[in-house]
Image (spheres, rainbow, N blue to C red):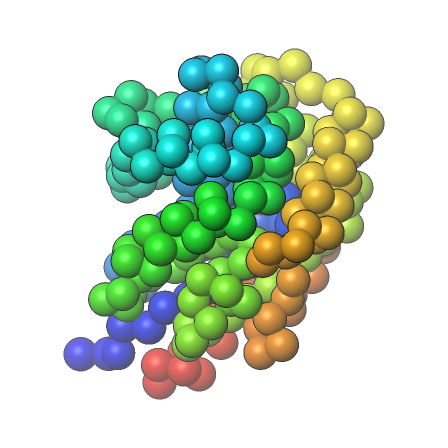
Length: 224
Ligand code: CDP
Ligand code: CDP
């Protein structure tokens, strides 16, 4: 049997991480882990319980009482918080605008990283996020850093909103993405960075299939 490695995929919002990570996980029969969904799930709980997203201790104690479950399904990955299906609501504007504040806190990150490492300890995982290659899985056998221009990323999110029948404004999306990029890259703890040994792919003018094919080349070099 082939070795079951871990694959880390990082990059800014809408670079195509989760789309391509799911595809790779399916091809390899690996488990896909969306770490952004975990920060979004805690943010949802904080908003629901009236916890201030700047209050690290309150968030940490909330997190300790928050069971986050990522469940694969034929429709894609489902996210449950203490048994409640929050898959759609955590992608909404309220959570999206607050999540990068929640993700700034070192103690919150420490607890999240412990959970993420536990999920990856047996190998055979494709994990996407911001700090997977640099911090969560520094020994991952394959590290990928996806990037794309902010215009292209806003265009992708805009198209997704329109396809789902959600209201969408391109310029607002572009500002929101740029603001989140800034918060995620400039925070002190585990900022968004390319790991020195990550393979960088600019997806701006590539299709999902082209990006997946490039990643599969890197994976195949590793597992032979
Ligand atoms: O899907 P999108 O790229 O818009 O975001 P996401 O992957 O769901 O992540 C949401 C937010 O969670 C990010 O903007 C970060 O603030 C935070 N995050 C993080 O800090 N570290 C991670 N490993 C994953 C997400
Ligand atoms: O996870 P992340 O926020 O990085 O991106 P995503 O949620 O996978 O969203 C990316 C969107 O852009 C999806 O609608 C994809 O179909 C589309 N897309 C892509 O992911 N990769 C490309 N090379 C081109 C388009």
